Figure 1 (cartoon, one colour):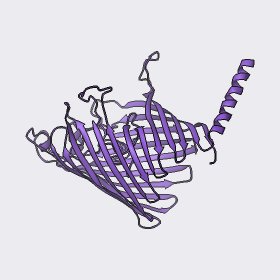
Figure 2 (cartoon, rainbow, N blue to C red; figure 1 turned 30 degrees about the vertical axis):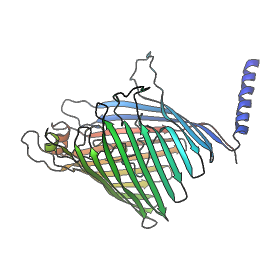
Figure 3 (cartoon, rainbow, N blue to C red; figure 1 turned 45 degrees about the vertical axis):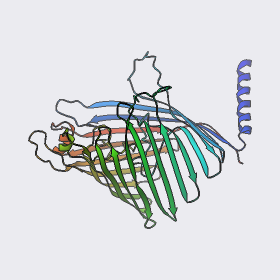
Figure 4 (tube, rainbow, N blue to C red; figure 1 turned 90 degrees about the vertical axis):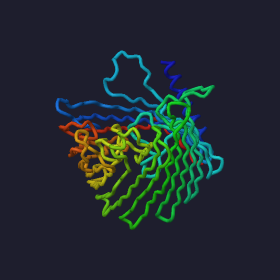
Length: 425
């Protein structure tokens, strides 16, 4: 008992000293438990005759440590475990923890800073630089220079990857860029916003040479009224693909957000990337590509929740997504969302059997989501997505007639704060 009391007193003394030490600093230690059961009857790929439905649960657990000393230093470390329930033997001795984020940011002036380390790049509508909430390893080991004032921001990032302690130049082994640089600038004008992004990415070809692509374009957000907002972007992409094709592609997005009241929200829009027709894709003499590469954009946040496009299935033909999203905030805790997507191919798809051109229509997807916030630290969602596909959709996947294209899932999220200290300056 005496030893326990000594340990308790020592812990209290350490916390007291920590609070005194953080006179002009803040330290927080948080957790995130994210549990996702999924009943799949065509999630990410259609079901075919003879297939049985899949049922699995994915869990991601994070420990988040943050530090901040205003105008001096910020730091973040996120350690995570990402698993599917039952994907290991109950006596397995396997290391699961990984470092998701580990960066430090030094402020040389209140306006100028540099962030170094493992970090996420999240910009604009996250079509080419985003932070997918379920992907376990999406991170960039980079240096990010930041200059930010009241109405102006400029960011410059530089990254160069290697296999490890590379004393002599080696062939890069991983499916990641060998090097990447981007420049992003933002200007606010009253309630409006304008940004411009330039990305240069080098993907190694399998030897010590790289294929470089350049992506650039503007994004704008215009507040038309208190209830109506327009958002739009256009990216142009040139350079060389890793297969050696000359690249000439583009991507655009345009949407209107309308909020007639606190309880009702509408989003009407289109996302569209150019593609290469299947004749060109199968031609060994072809030297051109018109397929837009979304680089590191959101995998699940755009193009529907069934994840049929730009996720696992190669979407070389490009997709146009015309959508209407409706959200009803029943009260402060409960909301209902319904998303309707009409998908079409950007480039022509040809039938594998008789080589005839097929319809551009891929299908109509409907996503329904029910969200309930139990408290500030616990929330849950239940969702259902279904695709009413066409013969063209069957063609771009397997060529066989699909039986079902739907998924039922839940997302349970708990975000406890284990410790936090903050003192006034």
